[in-house]
Length: 242
Image 1 (cartoon, rainbow, N blue to C red):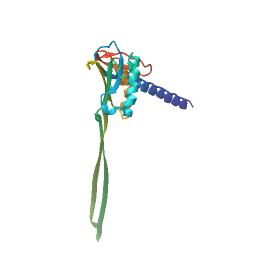
Image 2 (image 1 turned 180 degrees about the vertical axis):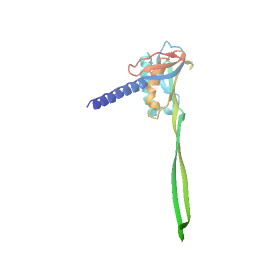
Image 3 (image 1 turned 30 degrees about the vertical axis):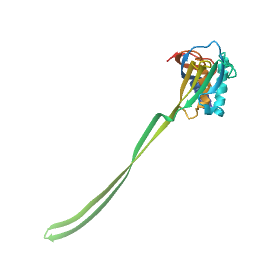
Image 4 (image 1 turned 135 degrees about the vertical axis):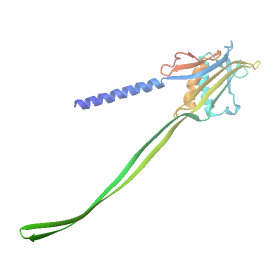
């Protein structure tokens, strides 16, 4: 009974530790952000894609709505193109799949089968002859024999080898935002956010909200940093100089 209780406690402890570990691994998001320019006095804008073919693309429209929320939080007001002081252009990319890491392993073992056979043959022949002469007796004994042993040993050794490689892949992802003055068509500020996804369950769509939240810190600001965001609290944690 005591042994069963200890097993239950051990399993519960392992579950708690595993949960804490997973939460600590995925509770923060970080990406590299680079920005140029300054904050304009008039923050009215209209939004369009850098690639004009994406105007009605459903993926672009989803990401554009997220960007609108970040712009609104930063004090930007969406307006009609003829009334806006800024044209904000938005684009994103996902790179080709490339090898992230290779883990290889190999093993081998040998098996031997032996067979030993021993055959022994023995043969003995003998004879005796007794002569009696007077008061004396003499006996002559003759014996002959043969013996042979044959040993047959056969050794067969088989070696087995196996090897394999676990290859993981990743992709570069990123987004680019630029604000252009609608009067002289000169850039006011630009922001680029870059990340690298390493796991098969990650995607551009899953990471886009976090990339845009990271980029928001550089709307109208110059510099470059690795921006870290707490997923639980929704706030930036420890902006680290790159």
